[in-house]
Image 1 (spheres, rainbow, N blue to C red):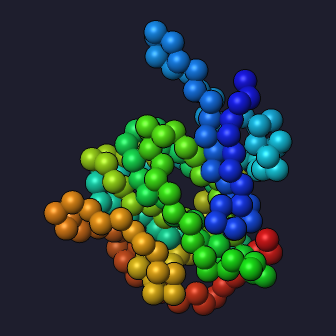
Image 2 (cartoon, rainbow, N blue to C red):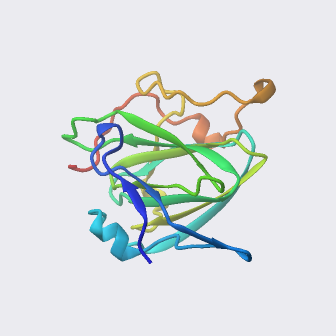
Amino acid sequence: MGQVQIETNLEGIHGLCLVTPAIHRDARGYFMETWNERDLFSAGIRARFVQDNQSLSTRGTLRGLHYQKRHPQAKLIRVAAGAVFDVAVDLRQGSPTLGRWYGTVLSDENRRQLFIPEGFAHGFLTLSEKALLCYKVTDFWHADDEAGLAWNSPALAIRWPKLQADLPYLLSDKDKVWPAELSDLPLKEP
């Protein structure tokens, strides 16, 4: 169907793309393609996705920042219900933007998707009561290869949104103890 809008190299970070699918509305509702290989290829995105994932999170849930060292994953992320603040951090060796992050709101209202190339850490904060996050990945999860960075790393200085009434962020035990330093990096040439 085409008509997808793709913004490339967000904040000067090579390969990071914001995808806005075309929405076709009528009296019945709407239709949208959530992924179209031809459209993404025309924008230079050559990802071969091998798995689709879905997570449901409650308000204040902060997941991440996750990555895999030997099996890096490119991701195409969208929110089917609710809203999140989604973050990607460049960890690629030799990248002029190594250690820089990009964050944006993805929601069922704006229907935007974030394409994150291999060699990035990823995380998100749930802004709505609940959020259903759907994402495609280019490699499988490898438990022995899982790594992460602290969501509140001073080296990254990510500006996470504040929640209502000082609601605390909900983190897994694993996400509470990731290192804050950008050591044992980088991952992959850009």
